[in-house]
Length: 443
Image 1 (cartoon, one colour):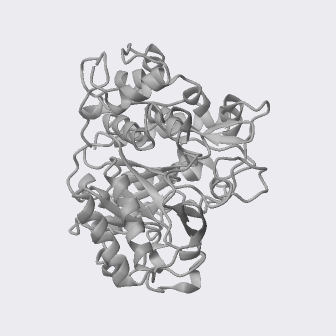
Image 2: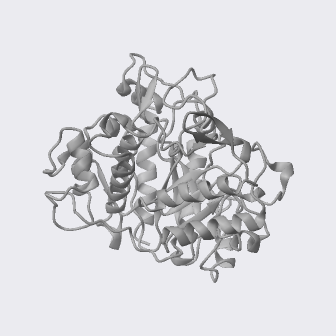
């Protein structure tokens, strides 16, 4: 048996690599309609039903939902990313999963978010015939203050402050098993399972200077500076490492404001790269990683589309008014000849404070997935975990980016997962989302 990242991950949890067909998934699977009916995923489900399953049950579920017509008794040795060409990011649906929020909460400790992200994969719809679905992970690097801990809901523990040169977050990696599988291999395993599911992967990054620290061995962390060549080099290399682990998309927070553009609406803290510097960064990450399929998504966009295209971006967010189907379709038509960059539409973003009616959210998803004349002309779209799996009533996406509360009533991860999300209404909403994707995935 080859020692692949997925096999090593199973072994690190005391599991054998021998898989069995998952009848639990068979009973809950949804299928794309018409010619796409081999595309399968789980819907009408509560997240804790997925998160409380064992890792081996999850991998068996993923293999059982394969588009292939035969069952793999072992997870395949070689996994390739879904092939949608080098500029796939210009058309993709990006779904941000807050892997810190769904991490294991043991008392006041927080860890293993990447394992929780793996467990959510069976319930993420695979890519369509004409465009990819891509998961964006909210956290990869350690956050500046409180990494590895949860706090009260009113205490700040922001995911928007990151530390470079310090490996990866205690919230995300399972450090108790790194003698059997390294931090990097845990990310590789996640990416292999996602790619097998027919899903692309990426992560959020921060470019606001005062929201980044540089860790130094046996020294105090130092503030990050864009005018320090060593810091710029470190930023590039940290991102290249992740692309080489299988990620293919980088969501750039505050990308709109690079080069002091539209700073009256800038809400980050600290200086941003200047425009030529950002061009250099995107170009160097592409060149050094050797990943021809790497795409960059910039937060927000404006009518100066060439500015973002020449910055190295493939997609922007939140430019097209999403509540009007005809407007989405109009912009799809306008950009149909540009196969490298397009502005995008959003169901919601990381600043969403909740309160939107389910009906409105479902209509936004429909507009994102069907707002075109021809499927190959679709605009990129962006949505949050909350848009597929609604959160409990007293929290929201932005709150969980700024804080890291545990909703456990007994100090166990299972209780946190059960109480983090909406219950029966959330499950029915997830069923309705599943029905929408069933119509979209054969396009």
